[in-house]
Length: 231
Image (tube, rainbow, N blue to C red; front, side):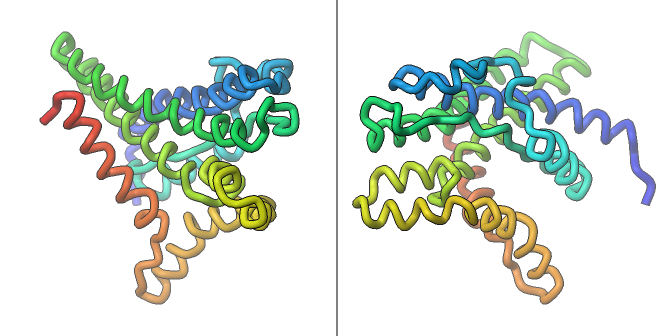
């Protein structure tokens, strides 16, 4: 199969900026929330920053998005940044503030998605290739920010939703859930990559990523576009 390098370059150009902004704001929001709530670990390490270089993870921000982009024929890109270090014991109210710090990341993505949807109205000021390129960036910004928001709210440590669940559950249950943190990323990667691959081999739809993240993301995107005046 011949690769259309021009199309691939264009696709890359309309995904890279939204991904970098989304993951940078997500991690910076975690660090800022922790700083304001008593833990200055991220602040001292320079992670309360909108400089993407402070947050880039070689696998999550570069390799995995490139693999997904190539494997999907340019239809999907997804990534994550280096987690911001948080010393939860330094927070003024560790159990409550852990939840607030965790919610700050997905909250920033929700805000960015709404802002991008509002900026779509400004496309009338553009034309031609600039109109097309900017439009794709803004639509992808809504999609990737909502994807990050929904994905990170899955109740699996070390995802943000897992930390929220640990903070909200009764202490004995929260402690048991917290013990999943080391295996959590393997569970997530298995659901994203391994189960769909197995399903394709045996002819069964095992794309749990779509059920739990993709479909809710599309639904919430439609709501955001409706609420921001796009019908």
